[in-house]
Length: 278
Image (cartoon, rainbow, N blue to C red; front, side, top):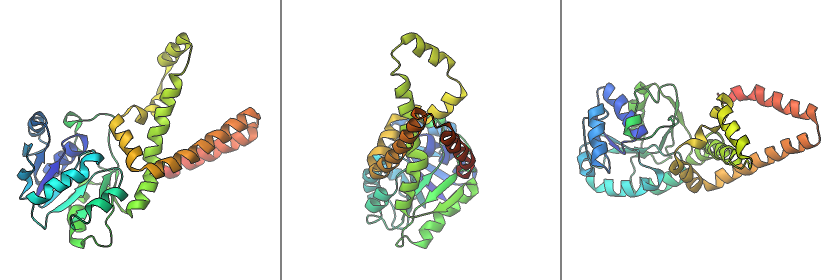
């Protein structure tokens, strides 16, 4: 197939590398000419330009822009493409995106690859980024079966774990396992920076090792992405944060009351249940 990718960052570039390795022709569009040049040199695309008209003759297009640019980009893209072209996105929020785009383009399949790194940009693109990781599709009852099949046929060879769910269910689930961790992790870093003794703060920074690295990683990621999670999945992020705050308050109370037996029971339960998420 001839595939289009709009947005040649980590996700778009990695998709290009993988799709080209499957024998597809990949055409890319980016706002920056330099990004287009790097994408071609790196082998992420066969050709790239800053003009969306490059994608006029494509079978499917992955729109890999930040969430805030998804709807405007697709509005600009629609006049350039054939009516049977299938569009999909990679946004980490689905309900509002699907609600806005589906009426504009019947062959739209909402998508979200649950993969990434701490790096960003075309330079960070890698082969096999999606292999073994969940890739969620959120078609509605009105989404044509042919459109879903076309996207699935492109993704299955990438060895992803395909899931289908309702857009609203997706947003509630990812609030727990993706968006909440970003806010919690950022709060951890911010809390540590509140240490008033500069000697202690420097010592903590010097001693920080695997535990801090693991729990702070997503809080040290792309600020724009974290902000968009909060803006576009606001109600579910708030819901998960309120529940998390209640859990923190419970732990504070147990420690204040020196109820070590109850605290131990809580820690045993979380130790046992962690594996159900991983």
